[in-house]
Image (cartoon, rainbow, N blue to C red; front, top):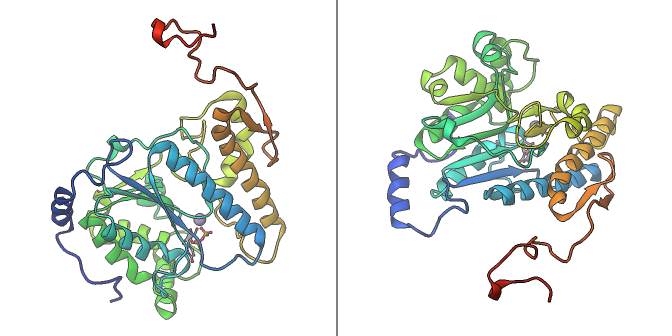
Length: 337
Ligand code: UDP
Ligand code: MN
């Protein structure tokens, strides 16, 4: 069958040795196991320049989230593997990154059409000890009803380990473009509930592996439903004003969604339909909703969620650190004479 590259064995042992030999060079910025946030988009320009405008804004949003949480960030625009294009492009990329970055423990994949909307929420990694894949989904939809939308692969975390390399090996054969992908699509449509007829996609293939392949896939996967590791945009975007009035960042769930995912939007395509128009409107609002959380520290906010224009929300001060009022030892006393 199709393979992403030479078979790798004993990767966990190899990583331990490598990290022992390279101690100290690769410390993470926050003292936790290293995590790399990974995203990407097609190498060429979008047919509609607005698509590229939102790729840039969504990339800025990742830069901000990564900076705030001490994550490395990798954005890919190279073709890693010709046969594994479109939604399959993430697989060869994830393998490449795992093998090239043995110092990285976790890789967090995010689709180009997903955006962080809770800039304060931090992944509860303690919860996932012994798990190697964290993906948003619902137990009943996936394991009881076998629905193809039982999980979503727009935003997921995968551990850099042998299990994950093996998973990628099992996952990839559904993907090569052409007859292979078309036939795999027919099989997935037959096996998964409510799946439309179309070529094999990475999400359906993962659902298939968890349901019908080796039970070891399911046993080391955490299906996350307690917060929006991925939140369908139509359920989320119309609530932003309400949330701003009622709640605050940090929850990651329906009180303040971690990720808003623009599933079904095709902002890169040339034809602008009313649906795409609505996507652009809501992408702008999602970006500004998130950007307000970033700008607040600097005393700015967007005039409205629909507006890229910003306004000052605080006066500048001569005491930006708030230290002048404090009673400090005489030699450190900063108060004006
Ligand atoms: N992708 C990529 N390179 C490509 C095509 C797609 O990195 O050449 C990534 C991109 O991040 C995209 C994801 O693969 O969001 C999933 O692809 P899909 O076609 O499903 O895009 P979506 O429906 O999420 O926009
Ligand atoms: Mn997507």
